[in-house]
Length: 332
Image 1: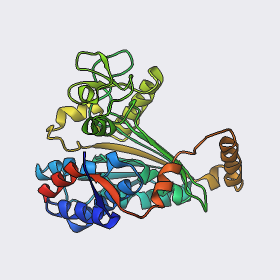
Image 2 (image 1 turned 30 degrees about the horizontal axis):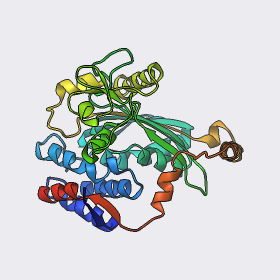
Image 3 (image 1 turned 60 degrees about the horizontal axis):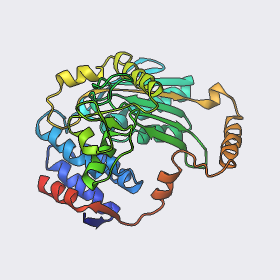
Image 4 (image 1 turned 30 degrees about the vertical axis):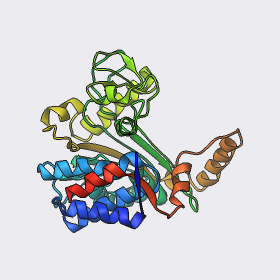
């Protein structure tokens, strides 16, 4: 399958042109285009331009508010709540993360509870930003049912990603972003598009049979949690944190309210930020670095986020699927 070489600036401009043509204001288009460009830059291709057609579907159908403004409410010194007003999550995060950082710096720990926003991007941008500000961060969000609990063959959980970041002053943070499913649905869809098989254990067919065919999983099948019962328990935790705890929907409730147009549904997000200067004192940075050095001395060990940060150093063009580029161009 052919590819098209685009510079990072061209990726940004293509995304922005498409978003402006489909109902976004300039502020929203800039924020989301920056996120899409950065995903392509860092090698997170399943969360870059690949997501743009789905954003457009939601915008054109009126489900996503491309010109809306989120409302920030400070519930207490360490609890911040944002009404997303059906904005795209990166817009909500752009407004909410500075407030969360300030609260965590002052109080030692703070949470950001987000309602009614549309999150379909990677989650590392929010936790990495907090870590760059010197905070330990954890974030999670649910989606629509796509993952069967351990022991079931029908979906109940979303892919329910979690992201964690640890600050390393003067260095890039340690940060991971992972679905609690065996594989993110976006990666399964990319594998389907590219004609690749997926590992056994990724998911089941619509008849509940194991398969390595990503199409059988993406089209009516179901994903499985990673690690069996262990991953299933973590997926359940995400449902509770990003649903009941922040006052938003569980994945199955989201599905009941969504119009199933293919755009990202509305949901909640939970973000926790901790100030290690207050919880540990002055030695936390050195102590953690000794731990990371110990890890890396044990063989071919890579700290989470290192590959993405290495990709980031390359400012050259990226090769994008030609069919995807043509589809995006037709949307604008």
